[in-house]
Image (cartoon, rainbow, N blue to C red; front, side, top):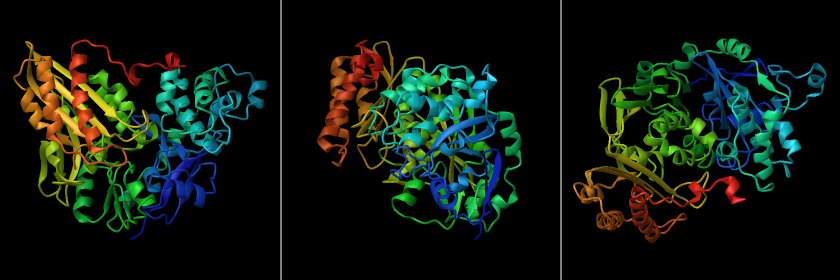
Amino acid sequence: MTTRPLQFLRRGQPVALGNVPPDRTLLEVLREDLGCTGTKEGCGEGDCGACTVVLGEERDGQLHYSAVNSCIRLAHSVDGMALWTVEDLAEDPLIQPVGDTAPAAQQTITLHPAQEAMVQCHGSQCGFCTPGFVMSLFGMYQNHVCHGQPITRELAQEELSGNLCRCTGYRPILDAAQQMASLPGMAVNESEVLQKLKLLRHDALAHAADSAYIAPSTLPELLAARAAHPGAQVAAGCTDVGLWVTKQHKQYAQVLDVTRAAELRQVVQHPDAIHIGAAVTLTDAFAALTAQWPQLHRFATRFAGLPVRNSGTLGGNVANGSPIGDSMPLLIALRAQVVLASQARGERQLPLEDLYTGYRQNVMAPDELLVRIVVPRPSAHEQLRAYKISKRFDDDISAVCLVVNLDIAGGAVQRASIGAGGVAATPARARQTEAALTGQPWTKATAQRAAAALQAEFSPISDMRASGAYRRQVLGSLLQRYWLETQGQPSVSLDTLTLEAAV
């Protein structure tokens, strides 16, 4: 099998690379093929952020920017996009001065505001993490500063949570994030970038029967490719597949990329439900959910870091079926349904919790794909809370994830939906606890009985993140916390502490 040339835009010029294997990562292409060694290789798993780059993609006629981890991103997934590395910020002719910057000042500008702010705020010591931070700052600059939006301390912390530094203690880097807007303005010439991206659009070769990297642009083409190539590795944002390449050293002769199918990239609002395409990024999927359930914002921002959320997809997280994936307990509590599709049999819909048959196993046939998630809109009496327990507050994997969603009316529980992660071989619905709650008066005694039922319902294992006994204890404690919060008890946790208050 052959691959079509990989093409992307860099410094205003198209880059074309031939014979790039389908499982080669973007970081490997940058460092080894293009000599862009400013992009660092750190953890190789999307955790440290040293490899961060920024992608530009046309969406509805606008240029959309995403900071992503290049270490776990398959190189062919950026075909047809614009790419910026840390070397490009002061060299790209399409990053130009804006506003009232005086001509004399323009001549002295050698660094982008993201870089200059790091210098002025002393945000770099050993320097290894600095390129990744700078690229996250660049993405933040384009998405916020260039639109006249202020960068608050909280926003800076959220959007830099996917970048780790062991020298500065973060304070000067957060200072730099806020200082960028006060420096002479720079911005990408988006109209010219968009014009140049039109030249890089996919053609029929992307779907050729003998292609090693298949990226269909429509759902019918995608399902046909799935039927024709059941052995191809399905990839979406690559935040798991990339790990299999970098950590398990797996090799894939053929990859089927689902993220180019337009139907899978849409969030469609219906009167009774939100339909989220399987290839919608976690960033966009959580934005759609938090627009309906604002209380989910902090929970959503604690799902890995922003570069992972910018690449990873909701459908990929669900289909992967990891028992410690945070989106599934949430979706289970929201009573979500998944839609599976094949070319031969069409679509079928089932509750999300019924998708799984065992550890990372599911009911999908070899020719089927997960195409969308259907999330019902909230009921009038719904009270939803989502809890994540992990060793680190940001950018960490859950030891326990619990999402409780009760319909409480007339002093009684009318309906209960509870999703749990980290306590079984699959993401799980706490059916026994739901039964113990439904129809009962919502009292402290009911909450205590439900907490005991929840602890008895699961037999979690002990591992490096937590012991089984700890996980059971946490389950009960979280349900009692839910009771207190529904009674108006103020929540006291890291969620409620501001950066200023913690100083």
